[in-house]
Length: 111
Image 1 (cartoon, rainbow, N blue to C red):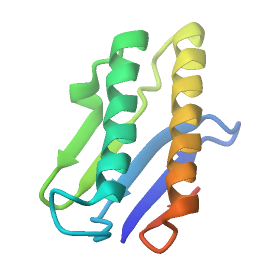
Image 2 (cartoon, rainbow, N blue to C red):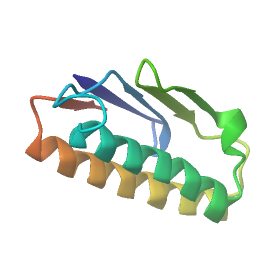
Image 3 (tube, one colour):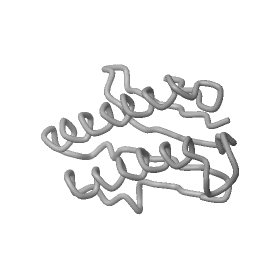
Image 4 (tube, rainbow, N blue to C red):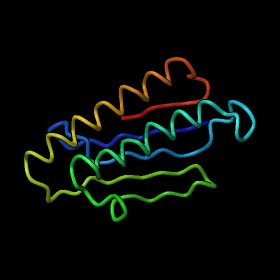
């Protein structure tokens, strides 16, 4: 099962997310749940880098073999960048929730 953890600041802004474990929906290379989760999460990290100019390499820990991705949003970004980043991260959550709604036996999301 894949476990997704979203961490928020007291004001509701997303500060980080972690995705761990393989879904085991089907065999390696044909697991559409893992593929979908990977596409959404890695796409989010890429969007944060491309749109917000946030260096993803220093903010991200990935271990593909273990099915692990952790992203920590930097705290020292300006308000405009933070607003863009929050929109991207909230959109990621909607996409992950959509996958979890269809494949709840393989994905859990905790905030």
